[in-house]
Length: 250
Ligand code: BTN
Image (tube, rainbow, N blue to C red; front, side):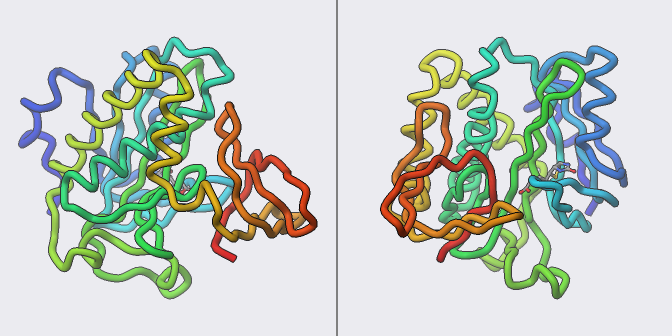
């Protein structure tokens, strides 16, 4: 069923929401809206994306039945806190999904919502046209995935055995995002780092492989530093800070 923005008008509280049948990527659409000075909080979503973007230059599978949207945020935050917005959005999406249907979402640093070893949602935050563009992709009602990602992805439908209202989930995620951004603003990074640490089984004591393209690191996670980067104790005993990379269980 097509996404019904009419049915959630009252809950959107005057927020600008644009929903497209198909687009290349809502990241590009949101960036264009930011260029024309749209208000903070403006959302652009799509039923399907033909060039959905993931982190680290990867693509994001965006066939029908998922929830794909980007929000334009103009936040009055010091630039050192910007990477924390990714974690804040992940926390918000995880908390919203738990409330919405009880699915036991784990957070894999820095931006993945996981159910066991399979990915349920991803977050991509980019700085563009003087705004932060926060993209969220959630697998909601897909009953299967293409062969190349079938072992890596899951959906709420697969996890819970039933279909869910994407409109309702969208409203719950937006509310949770507002709430968590307010925590970042009022209590600062340490509050978000502590919530992320509690919500993620990956932050402490987890044997992982970090894929950094040119090299792979193996070790055991040892918490987050004050900027939100992941500390990894390598197998030779030294501790390194992971600024970027794909983390997976060893
Ligand atoms: C990742 O896990 O690598 C991030 C995935 C982010 C996907 C979302 S879907 C909505 C928005 N539009 C995009 O092209 N990407 C983000």
